[in-house]
Image (cartoon, rainbow, N blue to C red; front, side):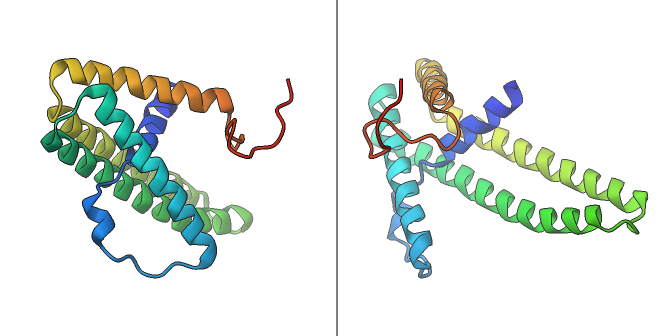
Length: 171
């Protein structure tokens, strides 16, 4: 459970991308993807602004933190792409009764290796983020992360946000 919470915190933090990266022209997205990209960008900006206000980040610190958050987002995106590819292979092997157990075990080992690689890379990037912060800011960062994760957990996965067009609240 703690491991999932730890990963979820990185996913949340990875949303805060660098403003400098916004100046790059991304390839055109299909119409549906552009809506998701806009939502992620708004979410990232919210996280960055919240961190800046709560932690009292200087401009230099903000840039370093934003770079780390962008790196985390890039790691997450690459990891998800890898998992999608692995998922297709795993599914094909799982439904094929002729797949030898040795191949299935190799698939599992590859999957776990990818998970470990991703978690290690996230921890390293978090270390770089923490290095940009003073000790008091590090504590404030950990508390803010916990607060944001608790809010996400209270809503549950896929739950509409209150006050954002999610329909009537049912007590």
